[in-house]
Length: 268
Image (tube, rainbow, N blue to C red; front, top):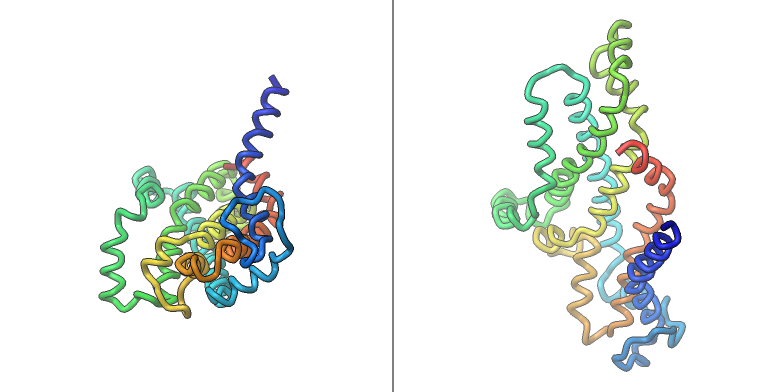
């Protein structure tokens, strides 16, 4: 049984990695040498040249900086708001906790396409369209529900005696939250931040709908613009650009993989 499971895992991993392998191999081909067929082995050494061409053609440098700021700021603020909401619904006495849980968590259940048109109209009417503030707001708002789900599920596992003991010593709710529950929830907060960082970095729909200028648009919107120049720059340059913009998420996962794996296996 264990052998069969191992074989299944290897097969699934190979199928999962096959598209990434093809992107990597074909991005080594120089644009002038590309003949339209899929290469299963490297046909050149033009990966760095293709990445540089993608950077110039789509102006990916500023777009990557924008996405980095969107992902970090939205991830941090969304996780903090989610932690506060999770604390209130798990520790602070009150009524209607089930209602508030489902109201907040429902934000992660509805598809973005359902409210995209009224969102676009509202942004256009209020001057938030094609602004950094507009993208910060939508990314923070969309990141809160799932972060809330992760952090709240972790806080449920913490002993209630922590808050009761702190209150007997005269601590208020803000002190209990800031000095006890936040430090004890570091692994869940880190896992939630990683999820939201990767989601914001890879987000395309809001990026192309709520922005158009190079001074605002995120990196995936810039990469989508590069694909529109398919006939000019060539497929190897587009594939190299896709690899380039994927590197930050890989680095984040490698840097926080232990925290991420331990949190998923023990707390969530």
